[in-house]
Amino acid sequence: MNRVILMGRLTRDPEVRYTQGERSMAVARYTLAVDRRGARKSQDGNEQTADFINIVAFDRAGEFAEKYFRQGMRVLVSGRIQTGSYTNKEGQRVYTTDIIADDQEFADSKNTSAGGKTAPEMGKPIGDGFMSIPNGVEDEGLPFN
Image (cartoon, rainbow, N blue to C red):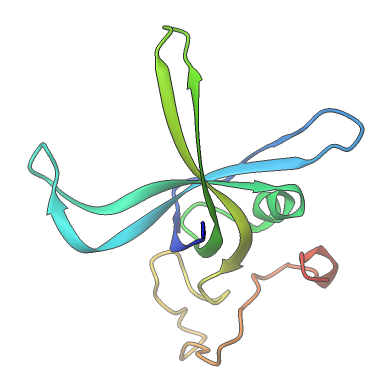
């Protein structure tokens, strides 16, 4: 079984390209900073407390990421691990590991900032088990309609 579930913050806005051909498709790439439960010392003596994991979302999931995901947002991604390799310009073999996203969700309410604090006008977090949608999101743009 090849299944992974990650929650982290986007390190930058997704980079989206569209495939060529008869049926053009969005391909979104972004990186999640995923916190570790236990910190460890890196080679230079600093504590490394997060892993930076590359995510790839295709088609409607890619369009959704392009439209709604922004740097600093906390998101939940589930998918599968895919490895690959290529030869770079110097003729060296480079190995890659990506998560191919099947599902993507917002992990914070729309009134929560990237820093994880609730906006003053909100009062208290939702906490009712429902996913909050950011301001300006129209129902017809969501992938489950």
